[in-house]
Image (tube, rainbow, N blue to C red; front, side):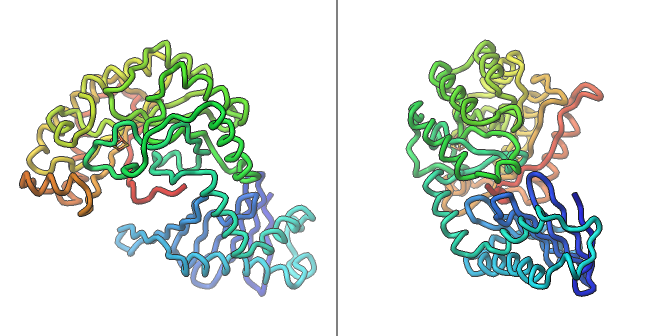
Length: 404
Ligand code: SF4
Protein backbone atom coordinates (compact mmCIF):
# COMPACT_ATOMS: atom_id res chain seq x y z
CA UNK A 1 0.00 0.00 0.00
CA UNK A 2 1.27 3.49 -0.82
CA UNK A 3 0.42 6.40 1.50
CA UNK A 4 0.79 9.96 0.19
CA UNK A 5 0.89 12.93 2.51
CA UNK A 6 2.72 16.01 3.73
CA UNK A 7 5.31 16.60 6.42
CA UNK A 8 6.38 20.20 7.11
CA UNK A 9 4.81 21.06 3.76
CA UNK A 10 7.00 18.55 1.95
CA UNK A 11 5.38 15.66 0.08
CA UNK A 12 6.00 12.27 1.67
CA UNK A 13 5.37 8.82 0.17
CA UNK A 14 5.38 5.78 2.41
CA UNK A 15 5.25 2.45 0.67
CA UNK A 16 4.35 -0.64 2.63
CA UNK A 17 5.16 -3.93 0.92
CA UNK A 18 5.35 -7.44 2.36
CA UNK A 19 9.14 -7.33 1.92
CA UNK A 20 10.10 -3.70 2.66
CA UNK A 21 9.13 -0.27 3.89
CA UNK A 22 10.11 2.72 1.76
CA UNK A 23 10.01 6.33 2.95
CA UNK A 24 10.41 9.11 0.33
CA UNK A 25 10.65 12.78 1.10
CA UNK A 26 10.50 15.34 -1.68
CA UNK A 27 12.81 18.32 -1.22
CA UNK A 28 13.11 21.39 -3.40
CA UNK A 29 16.16 20.11 -5.25
CA UNK A 30 15.82 16.34 -5.05
CA UNK A 31 14.00 13.47 -3.39
CA UNK A 32 15.38 11.45 -0.50
CA UNK A 33 14.39 7.78 -0.46
CA UNK A 34 15.09 5.17 2.23
CA UNK A 35 14.08 1.53 2.15
CA UNK A 36 14.31 -0.96 4.96
CA UNK A 37 13.91 -4.74 5.11
CA UNK A 38 11.46 -6.28 7.55
CA UNK A 39 14.15 -6.68 10.21
CA UNK A 40 14.28 -2.86 9.88
CA UNK A 41 17.82 -2.80 8.47
CA UNK A 42 18.55 -0.02 6.00
CA UNK A 43 18.66 -1.61 2.55
CA UNK A 44 18.93 1.27 0.05
CA UNK A 45 18.96 5.06 0.19
CA UNK A 46 19.01 7.97 -2.21
CA UNK A 47 20.26 11.34 -0.97
CA UNK A 48 21.35 14.27 -3.15
CA UNK A 49 21.23 11.99 -6.19
CA UNK A 50 23.73 9.60 -4.66
CA UNK A 51 22.36 6.07 -4.31
CA UNK A 52 23.49 3.81 -1.46
CA UNK A 53 23.12 0.11 -1.07
CA UNK A 54 23.86 -1.73 2.14
CA UNK A 55 24.86 -5.39 2.18
CA UNK A 56 24.02 -7.84 4.94
CA UNK A 57 27.70 -7.70 5.90
CA UNK A 58 27.31 -4.01 6.72
CA UNK A 59 29.27 -2.63 3.77
CA UNK A 60 27.67 0.26 1.92
CA UNK A 61 28.42 1.28 -1.65
CA UNK A 62 27.60 4.77 -2.91
CA UNK A 63 27.09 5.44 -6.63
CA UNK A 64 26.51 8.59 -8.58
CA UNK A 65 26.81 10.01 -12.07
CA UNK A 66 29.07 12.89 -12.96
CA UNK A 67 26.50 14.29 -15.34
CA UNK A 68 28.34 12.81 -18.28
CA UNK A 69 26.86 9.39 -17.62
CA UNK A 70 30.07 8.20 -15.97
CA UNK A 71 29.23 6.16 -12.93
CA UNK A 72 31.28 6.79 -9.81
CA UNK A 73 31.47 4.39 -6.94
CA UNK A 74 32.77 4.65 -3.43
CA UNK A 75 32.66 2.25 -0.48
CA UNK A 76 31.80 4.13 2.68
CA UNK A 77 34.21 3.98 5.59
CA UNK A 78 33.04 3.24 9.13
CA UNK A 79 32.34 6.90 9.97
CA UNK A 80 30.42 7.48 6.75
CA UNK A 81 28.39 4.31 7.26
CA UNK A 82 27.45 5.31 10.79
CA UNK A 83 26.51 8.79 9.61
CA UNK A 84 24.20 7.42 6.91
CA UNK A 85 22.57 4.89 9.25
CA UNK A 86 22.09 7.46 12.01
CA UNK A 87 20.61 9.94 9.54
CA UNK A 88 18.21 7.39 8.00
CA UNK A 89 16.73 6.23 11.30
CA UNK A 90 16.72 9.73 12.82
CA UNK A 91 14.67 10.97 9.88
CA UNK A 92 11.96 8.42 10.63
CA UNK A 93 12.17 9.30 14.34
CA UNK A 94 11.67 13.00 13.52
CA UNK A 95 8.76 12.15 11.26
CA UNK A 96 7.05 10.26 14.09
CA UNK A 97 7.65 12.90 16.78
CA UNK A 98 4.49 14.84 15.94
CA UNK A 99 1.81 12.23 15.44
CA UNK A 100 1.69 12.02 11.62
CA UNK A 101 -1.86 10.65 11.74
CA UNK A 102 -2.89 14.07 13.12
CA UNK A 103 -0.62 16.36 11.16
CA UNK A 104 0.08 14.66 7.85
CA UNK A 105 -3.37 14.03 6.33
CA UNK A 106 -2.23 10.92 4.51
CA UNK A 107 -4.18 9.27 1.79
CA UNK A 108 -5.00 6.52 2.40
CA UNK A 109 -4.57 7.19 6.14
CA UNK A 110 -1.53 5.64 7.82
CA UNK A 111 -2.53 2.30 9.31
CA UNK A 112 -1.60 0.99 12.74
CA UNK A 113 0.51 -1.56 10.92
CA UNK A 114 2.63 0.94 8.97
CA UNK A 115 3.03 3.07 12.09
CA UNK A 116 4.24 0.00 13.96
CA UNK A 117 6.85 -0.65 11.26
CA UNK A 118 7.98 3.00 11.24
CA UNK A 119 8.28 2.93 15.01
CA UNK A 120 10.48 -0.17 14.80
CA UNK A 121 12.66 1.53 12.17
CA UNK A 122 12.96 4.62 14.35
CA UNK A 123 14.10 2.45 17.27
CA UNK A 124 17.10 0.98 15.44
CA UNK A 125 20.45 2.17 16.74
CA UNK A 126 24.07 1.72 15.76
CA UNK A 127 24.25 -0.97 18.44
CA UNK A 128 21.62 -2.96 16.55
CA UNK A 129 23.82 -2.82 13.44
CA UNK A 130 26.93 -3.76 15.39
CA UNK A 131 25.23 -6.88 16.76
CA UNK A 132 23.75 -7.68 13.34
CA UNK A 133 27.18 -7.50 11.64
CA UNK A 134 28.71 -9.66 14.38
CA UNK A 135 26.00 -12.25 13.74
CA UNK A 136 26.72 -12.07 10.00
CA UNK A 137 30.37 -12.94 10.63
CA UNK A 138 29.38 -15.84 12.87
CA UNK A 139 27.20 -17.26 10.10
CA UNK A 140 29.32 -16.57 7.02
CA UNK A 141 32.91 -16.76 5.86
CA UNK A 142 33.39 -13.65 3.67
CA UNK A 143 31.26 -14.05 0.53
CA UNK A 144 33.79 -13.50 -2.28
CA UNK A 145 31.63 -12.68 -5.27
CA UNK A 146 28.20 -13.30 -6.79
CA UNK A 147 26.86 -12.79 -10.31
CA UNK A 148 25.14 -9.38 -10.52
CA UNK A 149 21.65 -10.84 -10.80
CA UNK A 150 22.26 -12.72 -7.53
CA UNK A 151 23.14 -9.87 -5.15
CA UNK A 152 19.76 -10.28 -3.52
CA UNK A 153 19.99 -14.02 -3.02
CA UNK A 154 20.27 -16.05 0.17
CA UNK A 155 23.86 -17.30 0.08
CA UNK A 156 24.45 -20.75 1.53
CA UNK A 157 28.06 -21.83 1.77
CA UNK A 158 27.94 -25.49 0.80
CA UNK A 159 31.67 -25.33 0.26
CA UNK A 160 34.30 -22.87 1.37
CA UNK A 161 36.94 -21.42 -0.92
CA UNK A 162 37.87 -22.56 -4.41
CA UNK A 163 39.02 -26.10 -5.17
CA UNK A 164 41.46 -24.73 -7.79
CA UNK A 165 42.66 -21.36 -6.56
CA UNK A 166 45.16 -21.15 -9.39
CA UNK A 167 43.76 -18.38 -11.63
CA UNK A 168 46.21 -15.51 -11.67
CA UNK A 169 43.54 -12.79 -12.02
CA UNK A 170 41.47 -13.93 -9.03
CA UNK A 171 42.24 -13.39 -5.36
CA UNK A 172 38.79 -13.97 -3.86
CA UNK A 173 39.70 -17.15 -1.98
CA UNK A 174 43.49 -17.10 -1.83
CA UNK A 175 43.70 -17.52 1.93
CA UNK A 176 40.83 -19.95 2.34
CA UNK A 177 41.45 -23.68 2.05
CA UNK A 178 38.79 -25.46 0.01
CA UNK A 179 36.45 -27.77 1.85
CA UNK A 180 33.01 -29.30 1.47
CA UNK A 181 30.79 -29.03 4.52
CA UNK A 182 29.45 -32.20 6.11
CA UNK A 183 25.66 -32.61 6.12
CA UNK A 184 25.53 -31.84 9.85
CA UNK A 185 27.63 -28.71 9.49
CA UNK A 186 25.66 -27.53 6.48
CA UNK A 187 22.33 -28.09 8.23
CA UNK A 188 23.56 -25.95 11.11
CA UNK A 189 24.80 -23.26 8.68
CA UNK A 190 21.48 -23.23 6.75
CA UNK A 191 19.51 -22.84 10.00
CA UNK A 192 21.78 -20.02 11.16
CA UNK A 193 21.44 -18.19 7.82
CA UNK A 194 17.66 -18.55 8.02
CA UNK A 195 17.64 -17.15 11.53
CA UNK A 196 20.07 -14.34 10.72
CA UNK A 197 18.15 -13.04 7.70
CA UNK A 198 14.92 -13.48 9.65
CA UNK A 199 12.03 -11.32 8.43
CA UNK A 200 14.41 -9.87 5.83
CA UNK A 201 13.89 -13.15 3.93
CA UNK A 202 10.93 -11.64 2.04
CA UNK A 203 13.33 -9.31 0.33
CA UNK A 204 15.54 -12.13 -0.88
CA UNK A 205 15.24 -13.66 -4.31
CA UNK A 206 16.88 -17.01 -5.09
CA UNK A 207 19.31 -19.16 -3.17
CA UNK A 208 22.95 -19.06 -4.19
CA UNK A 209 25.19 -21.96 -3.29
CA UNK A 210 28.65 -20.71 -2.44
CA UNK A 211 31.54 -20.42 -2.55
CA UNK A 212 33.44 -20.35 -5.85
CA UNK A 213 32.42 -23.67 -7.31
CA UNK A 214 30.03 -25.48 -5.00
CA UNK A 215 29.12 -27.76 -7.90
CA UNK A 216 32.55 -29.32 -7.88
CA UNK A 217 31.11 -31.29 -4.94
CA UNK A 218 30.54 -34.89 -6.11
CA UNK A 219 26.85 -35.43 -6.88
CA UNK A 220 26.43 -38.15 -4.25
CA UNK A 221 27.60 -35.67 -1.59
CA UNK A 222 25.78 -32.70 -3.10
CA UNK A 223 22.32 -34.27 -3.16
CA UNK A 224 21.93 -34.59 0.63
CA UNK A 225 23.09 -30.98 0.94
CA UNK A 226 20.45 -29.77 -1.54
CA UNK A 227 17.87 -31.80 0.37
CA UNK A 228 18.85 -29.83 3.47
CA UNK A 229 18.28 -26.58 1.54
CA UNK A 230 14.78 -27.82 0.69
CA UNK A 231 14.08 -28.74 4.32
CA UNK A 232 15.19 -25.35 5.58
CA UNK A 233 13.94 -22.91 2.91
CA UNK A 234 10.96 -22.52 0.63
CA UNK A 235 13.06 -23.04 -2.50
CA UNK A 236 10.13 -22.50 -4.85
CA UNK A 237 9.11 -19.22 -3.29
CA UNK A 238 12.68 -18.02 -3.38
CA UNK A 239 12.91 -18.82 -7.10
CA UNK A 240 15.23 -21.82 -7.05
CA UNK A 241 18.92 -22.45 -6.52
CA UNK A 242 21.88 -21.04 -8.43
CA UNK A 243 25.65 -21.65 -8.24
CA UNK A 244 28.99 -21.19 -9.96
CA UNK A 245 30.76 -23.94 -11.81
CA UNK A 246 34.29 -22.73 -12.22
CA UNK A 247 37.32 -24.51 -13.61
CA UNK A 248 36.66 -27.67 -15.58
CA UNK A 249 39.29 -30.19 -14.69
CA UNK A 250 37.52 -31.45 -11.57
CA UNK A 251 34.72 -33.95 -11.23
CA UNK A 252 32.59 -33.73 -14.34
CA UNK A 253 28.85 -34.09 -13.98
CA UNK A 254 26.58 -35.73 -16.54
CA UNK A 255 23.21 -34.51 -17.80
CA UNK A 256 21.63 -37.08 -15.43
CA UNK A 257 23.39 -35.45 -12.49
CA UNK A 258 22.12 -32.03 -13.58
CA UNK A 259 18.62 -33.41 -14.05
CA UNK A 260 18.73 -34.66 -10.48
CA UNK A 261 19.88 -31.23 -9.27
CA UNK A 262 17.05 -29.64 -11.24
CA UNK A 263 14.54 -31.88 -9.50
CA UNK A 264 15.87 -30.51 -6.22
CA UNK A 265 15.34 -26.90 -7.32
CA UNK A 266 18.54 -25.97 -9.19
CA UNK A 267 17.83 -23.41 -11.91
CA UNK A 268 20.93 -21.88 -13.38
CA UNK A 269 24.68 -22.44 -13.31
CA UNK A 270 27.18 -19.64 -13.84
CA UNK A 271 30.24 -20.69 -15.80
CA UNK A 272 33.46 -18.76 -15.30
CA UNK A 273 34.56 -19.28 -18.89
CA UNK A 274 36.83 -16.21 -19.14
CA UNK A 275 37.89 -17.07 -22.70
CA UNK A 276 37.39 -19.60 -25.47
CA UNK A 277 41.09 -19.42 -26.23
CA UNK A 278 43.12 -22.25 -24.69
CA UNK A 279 46.43 -20.37 -24.85
CA UNK A 280 44.89 -17.49 -22.91
CA UNK A 281 43.31 -19.87 -20.38
CA UNK A 282 46.77 -21.35 -19.89
CA UNK A 283 48.28 -17.90 -19.44
CA UNK A 284 45.59 -17.13 -16.84
CA UNK A 285 46.33 -20.49 -15.19
CA UNK A 286 42.63 -21.30 -15.42
CA UNK A 287 42.01 -25.03 -15.08
CA UNK A 288 40.47 -26.82 -18.06
CA UNK A 289 40.16 -26.04 -21.72
CA UNK A 290 37.52 -24.46 -23.93
CA UNK A 291 36.21 -27.86 -24.99
CA UNK A 292 35.67 -28.79 -21.31
CA UNK A 293 33.52 -25.69 -20.84
CA UNK A 294 31.54 -26.55 -23.97
CA UNK A 295 30.95 -30.09 -22.74
CA UNK A 296 29.87 -28.79 -19.32
CA UNK A 297 27.36 -26.38 -20.91
CA UNK A 298 25.98 -29.16 -23.13
CA UNK A 299 25.46 -31.47 -20.14
CA UNK A 300 23.93 -28.72 -18.00
CA UNK A 301 21.46 -27.75 -20.72
CA UNK A 302 20.61 -31.38 -21.49
CA UNK A 303 19.81 -31.74 -17.80
CA UNK A 304 17.24 -28.92 -18.17
CA UNK A 305 19.18 -26.13 -16.44
CA UNK A 306 20.17 -22.78 -17.89
CA UNK A 307 23.62 -21.18 -17.83
CA UNK A 308 25.20 -17.79 -17.30
CA UNK A 309 28.54 -17.63 -19.15
CA UNK A 310 31.10 -15.11 -17.92
CA UNK A 311 33.75 -13.72 -20.30
CA UNK A 312 36.77 -11.77 -19.06
CA UNK A 313 37.28 -8.63 -21.13
CA UNK A 314 40.82 -7.37 -21.51
CA UNK A 315 42.42 -10.64 -20.39
CA UNK A 316 45.84 -11.10 -21.99
CA UNK A 317 45.98 -7.49 -23.16
CA UNK A 318 46.71 -6.52 -26.74
CA UNK A 319 48.82 -9.61 -27.44
CA UNK A 320 45.93 -12.04 -26.83
CA UNK A 321 43.10 -9.77 -28.00
CA UNK A 322 42.57 -11.20 -31.48
CA UNK A 323 42.57 -14.86 -30.48
CA UNK A 324 40.54 -14.09 -27.34
CA UNK A 325 37.81 -12.52 -29.49
CA UNK A 326 37.87 -15.13 -32.27
CA UNK A 327 37.94 -18.25 -30.10
CA UNK A 328 35.47 -16.93 -27.53
CA UNK A 329 32.96 -16.05 -30.25
CA UNK A 330 33.49 -19.48 -31.83
CA UNK A 331 32.93 -21.25 -28.52
CA UNK A 332 29.87 -19.20 -27.51
CA UNK A 333 28.34 -19.87 -30.93
CA UNK A 334 28.73 -23.61 -30.32
CA UNK A 335 26.94 -23.48 -26.98
CA UNK A 336 23.37 -23.20 -28.35
CA UNK A 337 22.50 -20.55 -25.77
CA UNK A 338 18.95 -19.26 -25.69
CA UNK A 339 16.77 -16.73 -23.91
CA UNK A 340 16.94 -18.68 -20.62
CA UNK A 341 20.70 -18.15 -20.56
CA UNK A 342 22.90 -15.15 -19.85
CA UNK A 343 26.21 -13.91 -21.18
CA UNK A 344 28.20 -11.63 -18.90
CA UNK A 345 31.14 -9.46 -19.87
CA UNK A 346 33.31 -8.96 -16.84
CA UNK A 347 36.15 -6.51 -17.09
CA UNK A 348 39.58 -7.63 -15.89
CA UNK A 349 40.31 -5.64 -12.74
CA UNK A 350 44.01 -5.53 -12.01
CA UNK A 351 45.87 -4.64 -8.85
CA UNK A 352 49.53 -4.77 -8.03
CA UNK A 353 49.11 -7.82 -5.73
CA UNK A 354 47.63 -10.01 -8.43
CA UNK A 355 49.82 -12.68 -9.93
CA UNK A 356 48.28 -11.74 -13.27
CA UNK A 357 49.77 -8.24 -13.05
CA UNK A 358 53.24 -9.63 -12.31
CA UNK A 359 52.98 -12.17 -15.16
CA UNK A 360 51.68 -9.52 -17.56
CA UNK A 361 54.66 -7.32 -16.69
CA UNK A 362 57.14 -10.19 -17.20
CA UNK A 363 55.51 -11.07 -20.53
CA UNK A 364 55.56 -7.39 -21.51
CA UNK A 365 51.82 -7.47 -22.19
CA UNK A 366 50.29 -4.25 -23.27
CA UNK A 367 47.01 -3.73 -21.37
CA UNK A 368 43.82 -2.66 -23.11
CA UNK A 369 42.32 0.65 -22.06
CA UNK A 370 38.85 0.56 -20.42
CA UNK A 371 37.38 1.76 -23.72
CA UNK A 372 39.18 -0.99 -25.65
CA UNK A 373 37.89 -3.58 -23.18
CA UNK A 374 34.38 -2.33 -23.73
CA UNK A 375 34.93 -2.47 -27.48
CA UNK A 376 36.22 -6.02 -27.15
CA UNK A 377 32.85 -6.98 -25.69
CA UNK A 378 31.00 -5.13 -28.44
CA UNK A 379 32.98 -6.92 -31.15
CA UNK A 380 32.25 -10.31 -29.59
CA UNK A 381 28.55 -9.52 -29.12
CA UNK A 382 28.26 -8.44 -32.75
CA UNK A 383 29.58 -11.82 -33.91
CA UNK A 384 27.54 -13.99 -31.56
CA UNK A 385 24.96 -15.98 -33.48
CA UNK A 386 21.77 -16.78 -31.61
CA UNK A 387 18.28 -17.70 -32.74
CA UNK A 388 16.20 -14.63 -33.42
CA UNK A 389 13.77 -13.93 -30.56
CA UNK A 390 15.53 -16.56 -28.44
CA UNK A 391 18.84 -14.89 -27.72
CA UNK A 392 20.41 -14.82 -24.24
CA UNK A 393 20.53 -11.53 -22.42
CA UNK A 394 24.02 -9.98 -22.60
CA UNK A 395 25.15 -7.58 -19.91
CA UNK A 396 28.11 -6.18 -17.97
CA UNK A 397 29.46 -7.69 -14.78
CA UNK A 398 31.53 -5.30 -12.68
CA UNK A 399 33.01 -7.17 -9.73
CA UNK A 400 33.58 -3.82 -7.95
CA UNK A 401 29.80 -3.44 -7.57
CA UNK A 402 29.38 -6.65 -5.62
CA UNK A 403 27.45 -6.32 -2.40
CA UNK A 404 25.92 -9.00 -0.20
S1 SF4 B 1 38.35 -21.19 -10.48
FE1 SF4 B 1 37.18 -19.27 -10.19
S2 SF4 B 1 37.22 -18.84 -7.99
FE2 SF4 B 1 38.80 -20.37 -8.42
S3 SF4 B 1 40.66 -19.19 -8.66
FE3 SF4 B 1 39.77 -19.50 -10.72
S4 SF4 B 1 38.48 -17.68 -11.05
FE4 SF4 B 1 38.93 -17.74 -8.85
